[in-house]
Image (tube, rainbow, N blue to C red; front, side):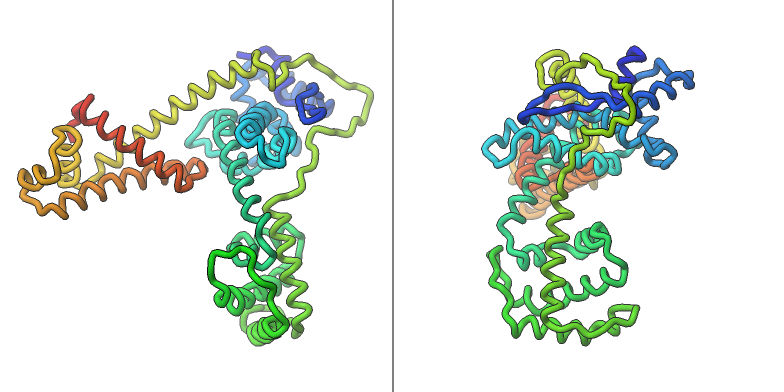
Length: 398
């Protein structure tokens, strides 16, 4: 149980930065009064911080309390600062300072909340501490890719789903979105397919190509767009696609507004001497303990996922894996013992490992953990070690 004042602070205070570093905690009076009122009215006032985190999360999901999101933003200030610090330490050669990473993390909070699944994780803070660093890595990767792209290369990379989301976010009408999307489709058909290759600096479309794109758009508009629309010339199509690229960039990398500055509508400013989240005590120790616990929980969950995948495998593949890892037989020896051909033994070994690895990747993706080629390679090494340990140490009977 946490003291009432500590619960109040957690859900109403925000990190203030100066010169790219932690400066102080600032309390928003409106949030402070709101959480105090809830604590006074609730018989659950002395319950844990996680109880109140999940309470505000459920309020936010249901839309019952318009301050719920701000309470959650306050609550997740420390995980955001922690993730920003770790990212800054790892990528301190980049153009961004710690304050930039912190603001990027804050901007991802709503996405983190949308992805949080109560059925898979009961601790919002623990999930945020795992998910926010992953989101920051994805942002940096996307920014590096987009920074070197021309508008036309960016439009070649973007998916139809992301394009639609970017146009919606820009506030365009459904009619305008349909027209922009059709122009993009025509652009892809006539430009992208003729410019295949790995070069992100694709040449500027020439006037002849813009004319062709406009002609294709005008031909398809009556069948592809439900509402009647006018014919468009090449200049208009070029302007639309240029603007579309800007919308996509803005959607991928929205300008980060400070979420730490609030309007003070009265003179009641409450201040507290809270710990510096960048200091070694007590936040760093708490984070370290939670990090260790989260890691242990992850390892346990991963082991369960791999064991379940192993148990669901067909009997012959299980037998091949057991002979290979437990008895350390060669493929030739397994072939003789099971009366199988060497290609069959090899295929069952490969397919068996791949099926477990696929289950592990799916588990990661279900938790919204980004998985790239390097991480898959690491997973493969970890899987190999796990298989040897499982069979040698525990002699599992499948």
